[in-house]
Image 1 (spheres, rainbow, N blue to C red):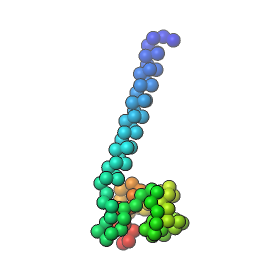
Image 2: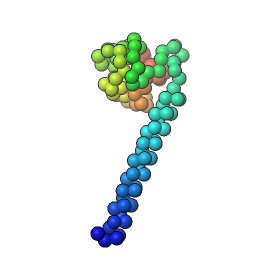
Image 3: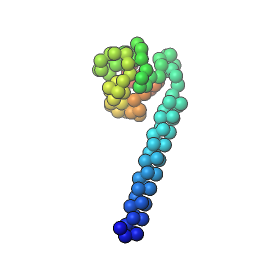
Image 4: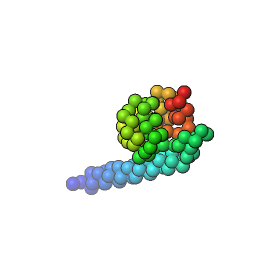
Length: 106
């Protein structure tokens, strides 16, 4: 293989690996911001809920967004929450915090 081709291939591989690392760092950063910037409860004491949460509050959310009320905040619940958020002009992060609670109860 010619030297310039090998250099081009290696350069492309390096770029792809660095781009993937940046994407992973950005995703981790977004998750950290989302988890640290939201209060644990809203003014009415309703909990901030996200994937893997369980309990009656999750069942309440599920019944309002039209998914089976199992009480487990699973992938289907998260997807439905994201769609609800999009439909109501909220940031579609899949996390039920104060703004999403307010929209759900409006």
